[in-house]
Amino acid sequence: MIDVTHLVLVSCGLFCLGIYGVLTRRNAIGILLAIELILNAASLNFVVFSRLFGHVQAQAFALFIIALAACEAVVGLAIVLGLYRTAKTVFADRMNVLKG
Amino acid sequence: MSLSIVLQCSLWLVTLLVLVSAIWVVALANLFRAALSLGLVLAGVAGLFVLLEAEFVAFVQILVYVGAILTLVVFAIMLTARPTLRIPQPPLRQRLPAAVFSIVLFLVLGSVTQVLVGSGTVAPEAVSLAQLGRELVTTLVLPFEVISVVFVGAIVGAIAIAHATPSERSRSHASHPTPQTVPTAQSTT
Image (cartoon, each protein chain N blue to C red):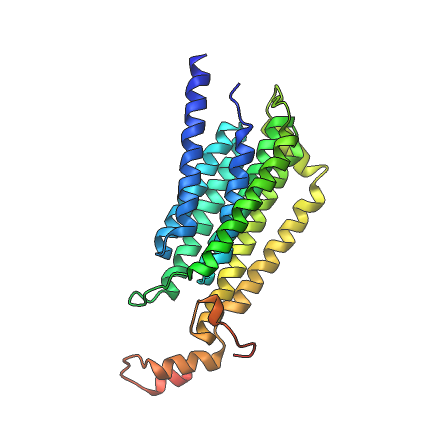
């Protein structure tokens, strides 16, 4: 059997890279990409622990995370496109009006 | 024995691919290239799922993430990109605290989760797809249905947000007049 325990560290690394991306990106789509990294880290963690402990529900929750990530991407990108139409920018620090 | 060595080596290779392309996702200035490296990360994580004997999750990951979400992201980038616009990098005073915060967070999370992993004993049997399917329609049937409702809500919401109001549509028509032989035909449509 192959050793998979270091994958927990890989998932931590993915999560922290995602946090770094959310904190430093100015483009709203870039922030969404970093959020996808964070969600992937979570589902990877679930699957690793499912393998370690032989647990079924962990894999089911990884599936739920993937489904919710799809919803998040759809709504997030729609919001970005709507903002681009009204505010004429995709930079998160230039979106400073509440009423378009 | 040689099979397990091959598996272990491919595990390390895929891990390396995931981490390097994750760094590309957050560090590349060109957003289109960042999205393509996100595709590498997603494919690599799917490979990790296969190596963890979660083939169905890997299949869903490829189908939903690489097939749907990545396409959507590339669409959004192309719809909002201005090729002439140089994307300014965030200033160093913002990047340095972010990097320090992420590294500290990584150390804290790593030290906490290593305790959970413990002795590194792996369950003898991987979760089978039949078990997973049975779980999804018995114990987890309520979350499963809730996810469906969330999907419908997200799709309707996305259409409502992204769809142009009639006044905006006429304004964009006025600013970019389409070549038409009969000008009155536009007002009737």
